[in-house]
Length: 455
Image (cartoon, rainbow, N blue to C red; front, side, top):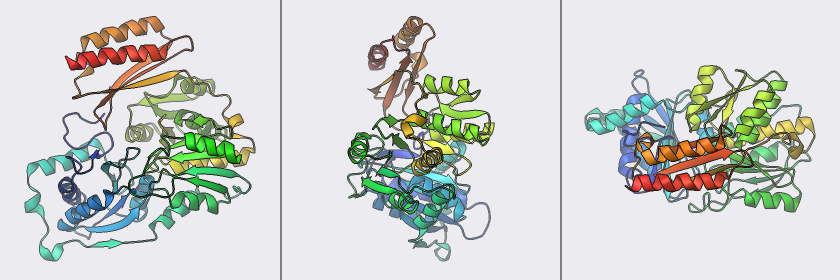
């Protein structure tokens, strides 16, 4: 998790309720100024920063505030409008920008928003660089660093950026294959992928049924997308589709639904792709990187194939860091972030879907059969609202309760308690064999945690 002492940046950028600190126009202006100063130090040439957003109503406000801050520091801005987060990562590097800024709260409701940065290489910023931006804002030095009038940056808008991303996604699909004859249900969560998602699958030849492609600024993630795959599941069964695809509001995560309407989470998708890449000699590192949340069933399935599972802390940025350090090209999270480092630098829902579709097209068998060998242990997570995040190791009753449950499971289960990096919540996860009451254990531990935090 990001450093708790930091005031702005969390696990994945700055996030909160729109127009309430820290997600205000004033903070966005300062973030734009600080980031522009940090990214322009490399040389005296003209610098440019890309700005994209999802479909939230407040995106307009933050887009303009960030642009004003960036231009005030003598750096140019390129606006690309609604664009998936992974598209921004790709475009930042592809267009040789000094940085990219994505305005999104990902899977959160429209009332929230967030700001995240990408470096010129398309990767999310390291904690140290985010801390430098934050400290520059806190220092009060920004006014003295502003550009003089003749050096002020300019803002431009380009309309063809999404075409670059569409071509990129299509080029990750094997040229000798086609999606012709394949029926697909796609839910874009009324979010950033509402344009590019249908275009990609249509141009690859699929017969497409769509949901969540009519954003109005307020309906992003509302009973649709990867958090609510029930709609896709129902439509898959209704139209007899071969697969359902549900991305979230910024399209960096995906839930896949098989032809029977069963939802396949990130663990199953990672397991499928790992097996296929390993069989074709294209899996590097001898395994995959996931997080502490990934199911024991995935770990066992990989072990049966002689593959390792490396666990990182929650957050796809930390998965990517571990992948780059260990030479892995596949990783991700149970929540649906899947990273293919051979193609991209961050979780990408549409890219993941295209890779699964390629496997289906190559194998020519139903998706349910392709994943039939994967086993998952029962896993339950309970969220606990918190007023502040006290160190968990300093909660004696909680630690005693954890020890009791671990003794009862006798090494045949896992307990994970952590704070959310983006919300004032604690998450209690219990996983174990079929004969354990994991829901009861999770509820019991959540109650103890709440009582400890309330004291």
